[in-house]
Image 1 (cartoon, rainbow, N blue to C red):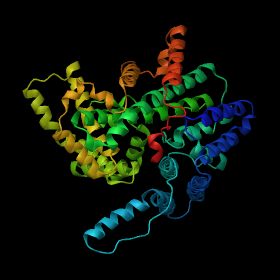
Image 2 (image 1 turned 180 degrees about the horizontal axis):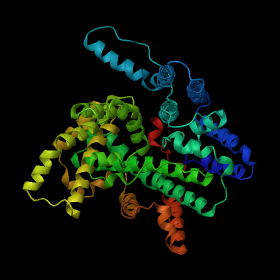
Image 3 (image 1 turned 90 degrees about the horizontal axis):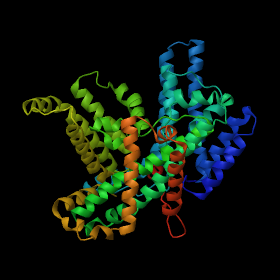
Image 4 (image 1 turned 135 degrees about the vertical axis):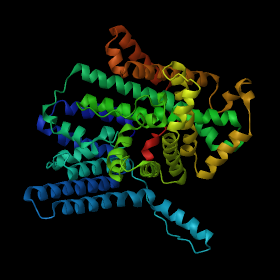
Length: 500
């Protein structure tokens, strides 16, 4: 069940209607049932997987709590054994369903080079939607219990709801037990009808639908056309498509997180922020502090810091950064192009550390001012360019395709397309392209408010006159219905991050 579907437009109001009237003690059970129905609407069989992950991490937490209470011998050793077995089980399921065929194909390529018989057996498995998200969320809880950062959750129903909470189940944000699980412990105390909170959630949902249906799905038409037929195009079209993909993936993923945050807020829960104007970042490190924040902080807390972080010297720090970003690339997809994408971002950060002092010396010699707008804008443009370059590997079907795509940018100049109307033949006509530009300007305005005023759209509108607030919300709703990409002739675009 996708957020941008008729099914969800029926499902969510029904969930709300019951949630608002049932006895307080029944709220968690109702949301758990709704969450499992939401997940099973894709494939009922795979509810077994999320159920297994839930039970194993729940029992692991109980065992570690039991060891603590009974003060058993070799306490840390036993807790570590439980944690390792739990991680092995959960990552094992993830490996089989997500990386099994990728591993076989990679081994076969090596065997072919060595002229050895290849492995013919492949897994005929459909990737369960959102498996990477709920697996990491459950593992985060279990590791927190091991560290003593959170108390053991003994209520299975409440813990199961934490793992499967439908607004953020299949594409994040990847919530922490300190935040979401602690709120669920107070679910019976939530004051359901809070006009400001409900209005805030509704505004966020409307903005999320606008980002997805008007912006992301529209630019996807151009992006898909060019990337799928890149051999037919030159540098101008290919660069436009790469920039278009940077817009598409931002709007697509941010839209899901925004709708999820809005829906959760209406239900009385506050999810963590997942995006904070990432394309205004002034460095790659800054970018990752603003993009997919829940995943970035997850890898920092549960992988980078345990590896040693920056505490064991410059070389070890560089190795740790590369391990984290290569792992992040693999998390995003079972393909070498994703691994290379992660490696590129890791290389950016290592190179920035290595070149930090030389850059500072050159700035001093050239008397470059770093406290002015021009310097900040130049940093943003360079960072954005580096991010867009890396996105080519992320979007391409394979690593060779990405390299050929970049090769055509370098060797097939077509600047005249900017002046002869050729850009209107890439999948979007003049009217559609103009609508895309207008929508992108609206996104820029909202992100500028977030960047300069540190306010999300709902908080900003609450400070304005009521007529302005209503005008903006109604205007967005009208644009969604009039210009949104949907209808009998439209193939609904699945959220990009569902595949991860």
